Image (cartoon, rainbow, N blue to C red):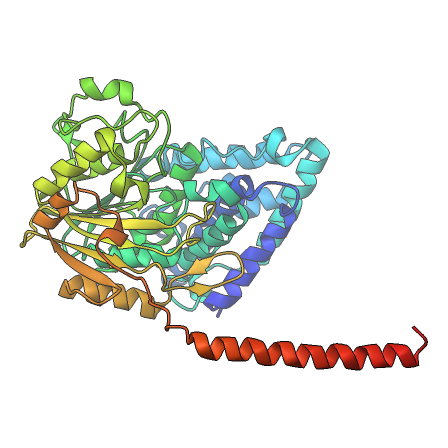
Length: 491
């Protein structure tokens, strides 16, 4: 039986084929796609063996049972089939054709999932000879990885291995990492803050590889929820689709497209609404489509149009407009969103006046891949029960690691306890009446509300002067002793 740690190490070792020669933001697509294909190939191999035993080799009954499985893979498209052709001169095309066959055989689930992943792409994988060598090494690495369910210690092993890989790719991918991954502990915190419940409809309108959406679903123990997401980047959208399947969340609806300019999650030509909306949108996105906002057919920007060079409030506005009457939203934002003026200040004022904003949580710096700036989480609640706004300054609570800071379980629990109790804690949190926020001109900069200044102990001037005098005396004695030694040495 393969446990989580063993699987993680083996799949990460498979990345050695590309590491150092191809950017992590690119090679992740090939590794994760191969893991997905190898897994569903091994699952079907396991299923077939079980049906052969159950039906005593009756091929008709075996074929009928196999046709009812989650996925169907033609014999020419299994991992074993293109591994057998690993020495062909056009190996990249062999894999591409197999992926097309898998899509065609599973149109209802996998249509378009592999369209943005090209195993014959010269600009990513090199010219023919180098490309074939790398792909052959990749196939060899996965050949020895037995991913049959009967060989795995638990149902979530493969899904968690997929998440492990995405996390490691994000660590290697630098600035591009934020496009597809939110750090695990931040996702956990955000998922807990929005408090999803059984039966909820949950959405992430900028879902990346789907990790935050999955974390939020897992907060509901039995996962009896409906999941929806949209992602603008085609390759990342494909990763999200595969991620859902590997976590056995087959019914998740993940759309490909620009959420602001072309929202795809619709009902009766109107925006679909949700109980929970979570997101880590791109920070201060330039050219987000401000020119299209006045003509927005979904009337999202009635509070005002965000500046064309900063799309933060475009995403926040979209999230609020897709909440149902009791919905909650949690969004990760750069701190500028809390205090910038102009059109952003006017939009922020209206959110506060409508009593939609429930809490602002300041996070430590250097938590996110690709940027060291500190961020904050804003929690909105359509059914908010009071007219107060909670500020939490958790910026000092983190553990340092090699590449970035991390939130521990204790840090997360401290934030959650304070949020749930809506309590004021000296130098950590403050529950502000909305009237006080209005007096501050709707500026949400956390230090205005939470004073974290630590007074230094008063300096004893007389004692300090005496210490300086003593040090000078000792220095004079040492200099005299040094001069004596130098004289003895003839200097």
